[in-house]
Image (cartoon, rainbow, N blue to C red; front, top):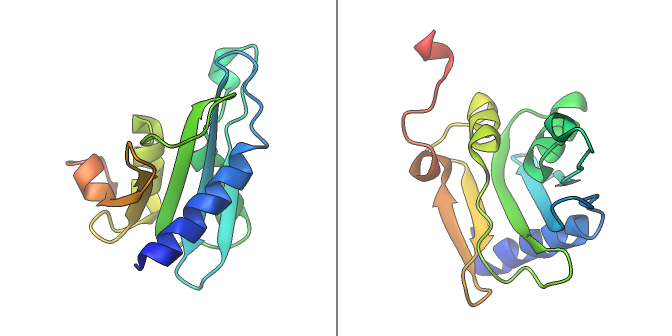
Length: 139
């Protein structure tokens, strides 16, 4: 994926981050999920006073895509940080989000795009972030 396309996805993740409902952690996260057909689904974290009801940005984007018939993903860009600050630091997905992504993706093919400490795009495969994921073959 070109650096320009990674930056476009990061910009979309930043836009989604602006919709975050994070009054408890004050840590706003946005995600932009790129489907293999070019569709992009965004998500933000949505917190709840009952913390167990909180949903991460990445899962919001995945669930939106799946609920509209998309299950083939090429990349996900994620930005996050304290609500009042810019998102120029890496914000990798949590373990639950990594596992949800593994349900729908080939871990060696999905690109997870973050910003490095200087704000430049950096890409990892899901398998780099989640080795030995629990899959259908594990059952």
